[in-house]
Amino acid sequence: MKSIKLIFMLFFLGNTAFAQSDIPTDYFSSPLDIPLILSGSFGELRSNHFHSGFDIKTQQKEGFPVYAPADGYVNRIKVAHYGYGKALYIQHPNGYSTVYAHLQNFAGSIQNYVKDNQYKKETFELELFPDASLLPVSKGDVIGYTGNTGSSGGPHLHFEIRDSASRPMNPMLFGIEIPDSKKPIINSVFAYPIDANSHVDQSQNPVKLRLKLQKDGSYITEKIAGFGKIGFGVSTNDQLDGASNKNGVYQIRSVFNGVEKFNILFEKFSFDETRYLNRFIDYEYFVKNKSRVQKLFRQSNNPLSIIKNEEDNGYVILEDGFSATYTIEVTDFKKNTVIITIPMEGKNSEILEKKDLKETEDYIYADQATSITKGKFGIYIPSNSLYEDTFLDIQVQGDTLKLHEDVIPLHKNITITMDASNYKAADFEKLYIGRLNYKGQPYYNTTYRKGDKLSTNTRTFGTYTLAMDTIAPSIKPLNFENGKWISKNSTLQLKIEDDLSGIGSYRATVNGKFILMEYNYKKDVLTYNFNDNVVIDSENNLKVIVVDNVGNSATFEATFFRK
Image 1 (cartoon, rainbow, N blue to C red):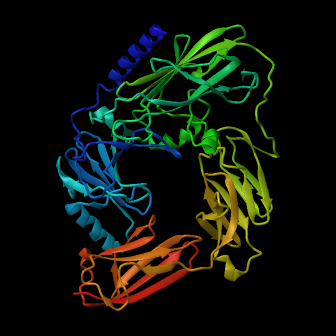
Image 2 (image 1 turned 90 degrees about the horizontal axis):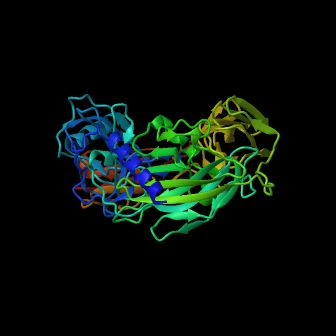
Image 3 (image 1 turned 30 degrees about the horizontal axis):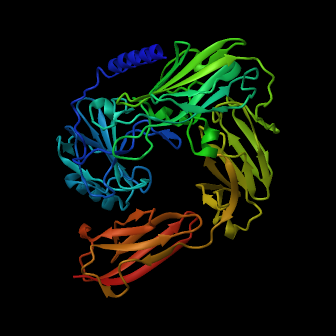
């Protein structure tokens, strides 16, 4: 056991030293002047993607200044209700770029530039690509303030470093120090029989292995009896100092009888490949158990570049009468390491548990485009939407389509089309296709209309139904009343809600002039800031129009007075 550990550590040290040798480690300073405690690490496994940077905690508060970590210029700005929210991109002269997301606001000339364009275009959401000479920044300049905009789950700064090809890289490689004295956490280990002749402990289905903690912090599993082609998977997290968040690890390696089988390194990836995370993990197990098992073998249609080395695609062949040891090493960036040892015995036994497989009339070949008609519904599945050939369970009952269940990942959008010719013309525009949530309620999917047909695109299997929304959104003032003086107010706030298809758009004016209102969808609040200096009269007529996703419209009007 000691010799195996020594080989692991020598290989790891040599490998990481070589990989990091050409990366500048003293070029970028910290973007914040508070202690760096992470809620999310680079490469962390997220829904449908790998996390592309650091999520830096901001003490549950907003408004900390964000500093340029090096000289450069702003080359992209995006403001959106969802996703990154208010995001800033800086290009640096050494070829790298940095990204700052979920900002509360931008700073100085950047904020002025954004606000000018929002008023010019009369829209809150926009994307800008300034010329290199327009918004230069020097190292240490304040470029924005931390916030909670977009799809953020709480106040923090999302920070990225990207290479010259816009591939996100692990910021720890650049010398940005994050304290970490804890070993990774091992949640579970699985063995996967791969083909029809393989089995583990007389089962053709994935087998969860029992872990036994050793005095030195390593683990050993009970000996497994197996035969044929077998792969392994591990669910693991890292916990950094100062936080209880479950972060991603830096490296996972496996060795079979002294030969390296698989080596995964979370240093860099491309956005083009990030959705292949769903092929990399045991997707069905995640959906059912909310734990991501990383498969230590490369299946077909898995081009992930985080896999740095593999022998026989990571699979092991266990022959009858053959004893072997499989070892998994999980390491964080600070080289805190946990080793899992799996003793194995080759035994071609009777299979007592056959592979779970439900055969249906719809068998889909992954490399072929497929069109299926069921009742009122048509389903188009482009080629390579699925990672492998599979049976799909597709059933229709009236206006509801059961399109398998969300236990198989989709890589591309598939199209669902529905014939709605039996609906009256007056109702047609209020219809939409929605995916049923866990409560059985339809969640709006962007719906297109052509003739008497409705269609939507989706990358999630599940149950879809035709829904109707004839109710207009509601609009209520929060911090003012009609006909009142509000000279002390710094903002105007209204609550807007739509319980069915959701908010689609909004527009606000005062005395006929467009005013910029920021929509916080998490709180259903629209906010106008009087610092914009659009409202200059003492008597003011406010008009707000809100439209939902199927065109139902509501109008709110009020008068307020201000000195």
